[in-house]
Length: 131
Length: 394
Image 1 (spheres, each protein chain N blue to C red):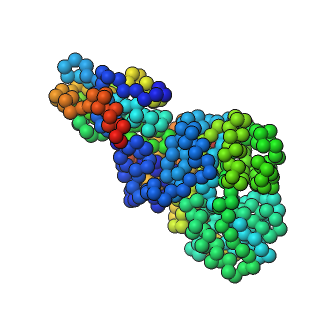
Image 2: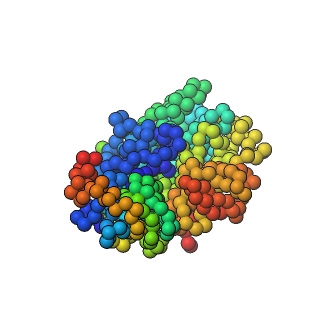
Image 3: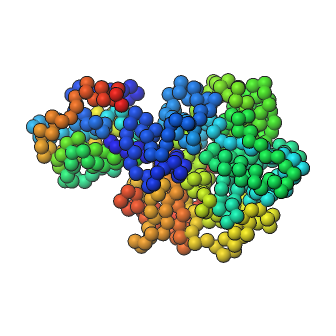
């Protein structure tokens, strides 16, 4: 997508990652419009294994554009229950649809209360303005 | 999201230590360690780049566009149509006088005497130990007048070096970098578009022709750094924006340093600061073809020795055989033993795999040899290839 966009139904980590809460203790993770725009065309996503543990504020994967590498930071802790396999063949979905087809992993949350530390869309937009 | 390291694009000396993670900021690339934005120079086209929405990065002391619409699109425009690069950051040195040929034969590795007026030649500038101080094109503009085009990061040091050696010769060495803006127009349609849009006949491959562009004296050179046919224009900085606009109107696609790097890597052109440096001689870099030791250039003894005795390591291209993108600094392994280091690595837009060049122990540098690349802790299978990695289908 060409224009900056930060949906209101997501929670944001200040390292430019998002989480969409599902039910009481599940979430989907991805990277924000700002992150994919800064990186440029994503050509490679190396997902974690299903069953792996991800830790809040720590890297769980890498996305690469032609010339840059970025760690992807987990906004919350948990266990990976699904990875977006479609990105192996079409990593550009991370650019085209960062909140939809470009999702990265689904997680069973270890501590759903970690959500309280994340930003809502308005706060995240403000963070970007002050950056 | 934390790291954005524009490793391959930055000269080694701008990176403080190992290429550690740089923090993501509004322009992540501006925050790399050791890069100050305070004293960066801008080309006459800087404003145009901003208007086109280019991503700008610090490069060799300049603020340069790394991409406009995207590296892949720009790369493909050059392979299939025509793209243009603002390379005004590159340096120009004019060498003139009765001793010009003898002087250049002394400092440049190639056979300068073989360049006839209107000719162009690639060469290395070596130190006494045969290390590569810079790689450059020499254009013969007249019977005793030559123009050298240097890498911007080395321009000042080259000038000092050339000045030092020129004292023994009847020659003047002038820094004329301010006199030129430089546009590289590259791609299968570059020539016809330039002929139509600018009304000039560009020089043939590896030739240079004087021309009038925008009503001012200019040089149109049949050279480039992309593996495609094309032209490099050396023009008056005052008319650079007008010429840029004319070429844009004629359908030439603006391209940044990102595509320039992927294009040159696919055809295995070395980049000074990555693949070449004062600690590497032309022989191990695979540039023996542009060295004529009999001519007695500075460093020739060392180069001759390296050619005769062979070198412990050699620069070799490789491609990854599966997922993963190699990057500068990655270690190369064979049978669990370190056998080399990647000096340039990238995703190849044409081949759609990870590619690179590495200095490899010579017994592992033969095409076809299987190796592994340690890409940030993950072993990626790779195979040494022959040059070029990408070849146009004919």
